[in-house]
Image (cartoon, rainbow, N blue to C red; front, top):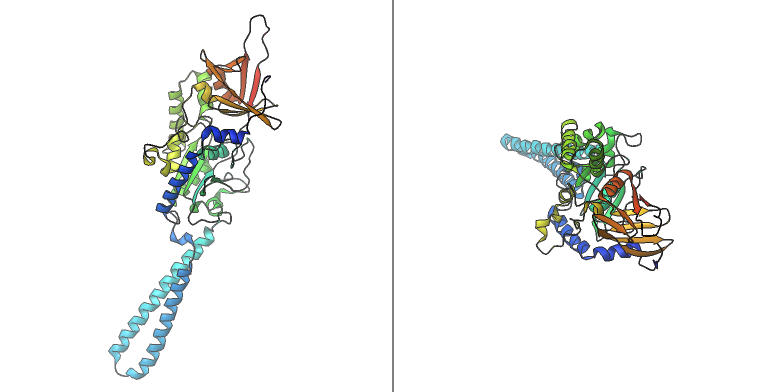
Amino acid sequence: LAGLAFNGPSVKAWLLRMQGADEEDRRAEFFADELKQRGPLPAHIPAAVAGLSKEDAETLQCLMDGLEKLRQDLTSESDKMGSELAGLKQREGELREKEQALEAESARQKKKEEALHDYPRPPWLTELEGTMNVGVVGNSGVGKSLLINRLRGIYPGQLGWAPVGVRETTTKVSMYAFPNERRVRLWDFPGAGTKLFPRETYIAKMGLRYLDRVIIVTAGRYTETEIDLMKELRAFNVPHLMVRTKIDIDLWNNRIDNGLTERTTLGLILKDLQDNSKVARPFLVSLRDTSLHDFPELLRNVFPCLHQPALGGGWDDAWALPVVQSQTISAIQGRWTDGHCVYTVQNLEVHVARNGNSDTVSLGVDGGKVWWRARWWISEEQAAKARATSELRWAPVTLTGLVAGKPLIWRWCD
């Protein structure tokens, strides 16, 4: 790193400058329109789960007051009417109708109370009305947090970045909103089927019926617990999407170990999920490169208002569909470290941070290789291997009259 001044902007400021701010503003506009069209609550939330309202109490009280008045009138008039039996029978009929209406209303409100007991609104889900809520469910290590960051277009160092790690970083429900539209929120849920979060009560206790959509994430086959969760969401008419992450690792492994093409591997994974997990439409994604595979379609399904045709011809799609780079460049996007510096790769630019100071370096592309400071290089094969091993090895170039230097080793941070 000799020659770098380390007087550049922070990674947050650098990423904002690289990406621009207009996209966030336009997304906020489209989210606001979708919330307005949807109404205060998701359509699939049944009235029985929405909770008893002030209007419910007033309706019940009105029926009770009307019934009591009719009873009093009937008692008073029965003494006067004497032989006017026909009129008396008519009023008795009216009384029975009132009693039946009161009984029906009481039963309806009892059903609401039972539903609220079985599916209580979770305490963490504040401001339900007028917000859009998407849940992300899955076990440790499948990439939930990184998926949440990618869906929001958030990069390391930016405001709202969800912590990412191979260990279980989610022991409670955590909320991550879009920076410029706080009413649109993604929720990171702990995995189901554990001692803390048993499968039998997961939907009820976690409040999944209150969400606009639920994303169930896996990095391999879906477990029995996740399949049961899918079936229960379907029974309650809660929109849900099944996502299979880390496709890039499978593609690399099958190419190296079995000589299979990308198309063949994707077909095998898709068939396995459809046949063995009974998932009709799984989304196969790589969170290292969101321009590939099913991620763009997943984004459109999670947030329909961001669907490209609906945005108009002037929309800049750099956020939803990133600039297509070579396979080598695409494979190394994100954050890396060599133990001393943190390298954030964004397209062909690299932000280098060390001890609170930073600078930027441009990558070179020549001869089918990507170059770091014209002294170290990686090929497409090395970049693909880095996806599987989370270790990027830059090979040194031998200069005339000089002994080859040592390789540079970067390790994946996210």
